[in-house]
Amino acid sequence: MGKIQIKIKETVLIYLKKRLKNIVITKSLSRYIDTLDFIKEDRVVRSNYSLVTKDPKFSYQTPFSEIKLIKLLVDLIKAKNILEIGTFKGFTSGYLATSPSVKKVFTCEIDESNIKQAQKLWNSLKVTHKITPLLGLATESMQELIRSKKFFDLIYIDANKNQYDSYFDLSLQLIENEGLILIDNTLWAGLVAEKNTSFSHARLIDKLNKKIAKNNNCESVIIPAWDGLTIVKINKKIK
Ligand SMILES: C[S@@+](CC[C@H](N)C(=O)[O-])C[C@H]1O[C@@H](n2cnc3c(N)ncnc32)[C@H](O)[C@@H]1O
Image (cartoon, rainbow, N blue to C red; front, side):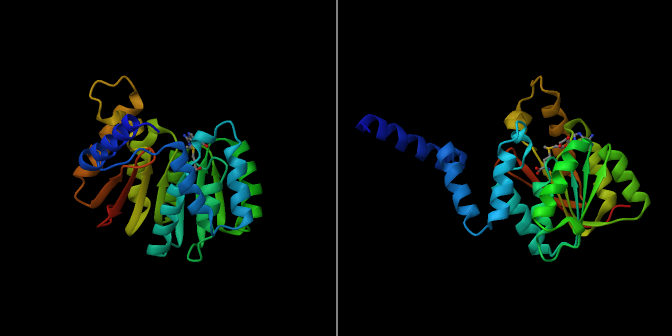
C-alpha cells in the first residue's frame, strides 16, 4: 500500500472515531466477527446457519451477531417465555430455545413453507418440544395470545414493516412487567433520518421510533448496528 493510501485510511479512521463513533463493517470485518461468534458453537448450529445463508431470501435472516446479543439478553433476564414475530427458516427461534431458562417460544409466520422448513431445523437442534409456530397474520395470532392470557418475558419483532406499529401496541399487552421488546430494522438502512424519503417503511418506522422514545412507561435504546435494533424495557405494565 502506498503512503498516500495509508494516509487516507488513517484520516478516515480518525474521522470515524472522532465524529461518528461507529466503524464501517466491511465484508472482511463481518467475516472476522462471525468467526469469533461461531468459535464455541457446535456443528449443528453452524450447519443450520450455513444452510440458511444459502436461501435466496437470506437477507431476511437476522445476522448471527445480532442473534447472539438477543440470546445474551435472554440469558441475562432468564427469559422463560419468548414470542417472535416473523419466523422465516426458524434459526433465531431455534437458537434462542437452546437457552436453559427458556421453556416456550411462540413464533408467528404467514408462510407455511417456512414453518415446514423451520420444523426440520428445530428437530436438529432438539428444541421442537419448546416451540409453537403460529401460522397466519401475526396481528391475529397476537390477538389470540392476548385472549388466551399469555405473557412473555421477551418479544422479538421482525415481520411486516407496515404492521410494526400494531406489533408494538399488541406487544405492550403481551409483555411481562420489566420484560424486553426488541424491534429489528429500526434504522431502515439509515433512511429513518431522511425527512423527505419516499420509502414508506422508513417513514412508518421513524414514527414508531418517536412514539417509543416518548413513551414514559418504557426505557429504550436503538443499537446503531446491523439495520438498527431497538431494545425496549417495560417499566410498568400497560393494560
Ligand atoms: C425478516 S423475516 C424474519 C426473520 C427471523 N425473525 C430471523 O431472525 O431469522 C420476516 C418473516 O415474517 C414473515 N411475515 C411477513 N408478513 C407477515 C405477517 N403479516 N404475519 C406473519 N408473518 C409475516 C415473512 O414470511 C418472513 O418469514
